[in-house]
Image (cartoon, rainbow, N blue to C red):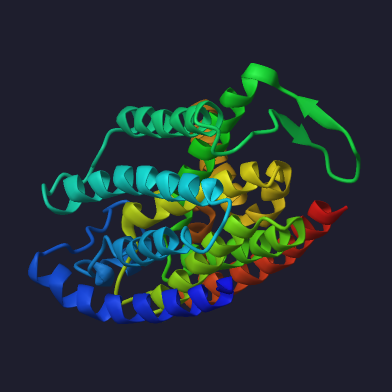
Length: 322
């Protein structure tokens, strides 16, 4: 069965699930808490249902499990399901503590990093020990036939890549539709690269995930009726890093996920500058908040960032095929 059909089914399922989830989440008082230090314009979003990432994760995981029956070599598909579940569970626990327990901190940064590292190490172990996927243990350099062998240190790179991008997407998820749209663009780029490589199992998963995210975007775009929460953003970041690793296209993610990278760097630069000099580089970080503070509308920021994501994504594809 063609993966595109699965993508269409995923879109329909998610588009139906979301309006069913919204009143349920409202009744359970799963509303978003807005940080006091954030932009004042965001206060109107307080109470908007969150944990909406459950909708596209459920459709993605269920349909991917079904797709396993149509794919001969379904090891990569199983791995992606497990990674999605792992990072999604971390985000769910974090959201649950914030929303249900009314603790704005959620999981501490140390707890979150520890659980993310565990998932990354488990991915490496399951890939190699159970033989679901043979990892290259090296990083390919675009435009060359050269690969940098990392041997046993490849697991360190995996941890850095998965944890880093999981948190990068989480940081980017601050405006209506921003992280969702950028994720669709990024996964679309990797779907194309997976097709070129003949990676059937990954093509199925990516088509399903893209379809699910498109269904979610219908309700997450400005003005959002539902937020994905950490449940969705941590899972998406972990998965996009995993996909780049499994396709042996790790370095292309710097371009395909360029906006995620820049958003993360803006936070690191802001924190470092303030600690060292007491001065801020940006009016507010992550970067999308800086543009809000200088007067850009939310929709303008999202649109510009999407366009940047498309341009850098095309560059990433070009690097990936050369």
